[in-house]
Image 1 (tube, rainbow, N blue to C red):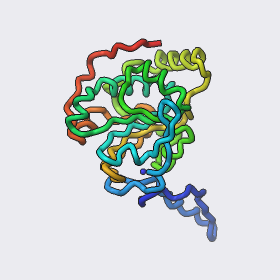
Image 2: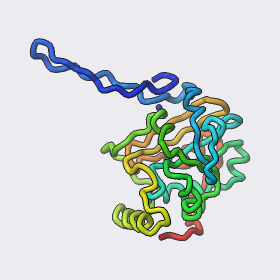
Image 3: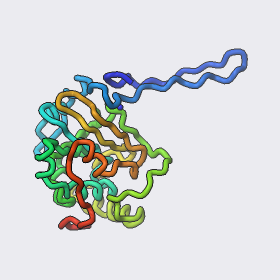
Length: 234
């Protein structure tokens, strides 16, 4: 997320000269980086709340710092278990540090309420159904093969987690995958205003930042994530 805003995606053009190998394509900037301002055009993009009301992305962190977590999609078991741990962060901890916690998904807004009930999450949450903000921030699509280590937030193995995700898909009131399955997420620290203090783009579904390492950056107390939330698992 090389400039104040992402350059339009273009296909690299190469040609051979005198039989020599084509030169390597010049990397295309993928979005702003830490220490750079968020482009006004991105801040002015809308997200939707639980009732479908449009809210400007930049309004979410205009007055104070925010930890903004973009998740892959609401049926992703890894996202579900990560958000279950986000739900354990006491609101008093955030208030003491004057920090807002925000989750953004890429489904229809109709899926917000069921996802919050499932995970026990009660902090701010919105959706970007067209993935415009994901794209402008340079969030990746597809899985990059890279070792991400053992996450302290993921409890299920890939088989059991995937089965539960599929079961929620086929038994849900709105049968869809609640977003693009190839879309990856990321974590930012933004605000006040259009200031980017930190950005991490997930390379694959397991490459999210440990929550306490992000909270430490904004002065929020360490949270014990060993206790399980009182939510229904299906």
